Length: 231
Image (cartoon, rainbow, N blue to C red; front, top):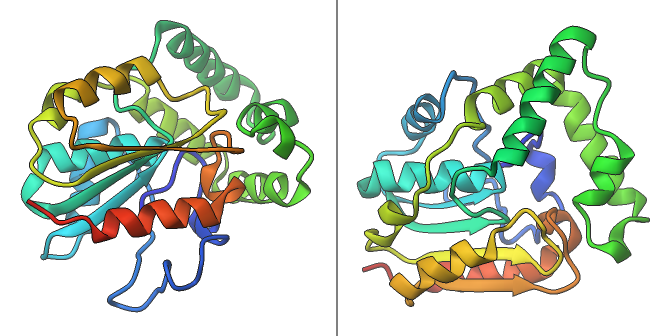
């Protein structure tokens, strides 16, 4: 389970314990490593996997990295679950905003995730949930400025993985929240025209932070994916 930008293992703490069993046979949190590029991160993540093919789940940035890993090393992955992400290039406006943020942080330092940013990542009716906001702030504070600069710097420039994903012969699920504005739905529609066997699951009453906003519904989607037969 690969987390998103400025997220750690607390991202999964609301999922049912039966799903995130931490025994050798259970789920494993795989932190985003440091590196200079997506390719370098993928290599380091692949090196951390066990020898056998795995069920690979990624959230947000972790979803992009999971997709990149599965397409680069398909023999290492049995099935793929992409949560709250569309593995394509970032729009130019978002790239511009990221460049500005990186420049600002480099000059002035990082004071932590803002209330405005937290609210933008949640469904409207979840924006007053202190439990979610507190978890997001705690993860962000633990990782800190160095992780932010590393993660944004290495992953802002990224390839569109549609062609590579369309060639995968393994069960793939895309899962995202109803109010997630970071998921590019037209991109998903085009990919599923090419691969109608890919599963798409939109979860109501959730924004981008799906594991914290709707953990039970997300867990049900993960269970369905785990039961899908690999080709």
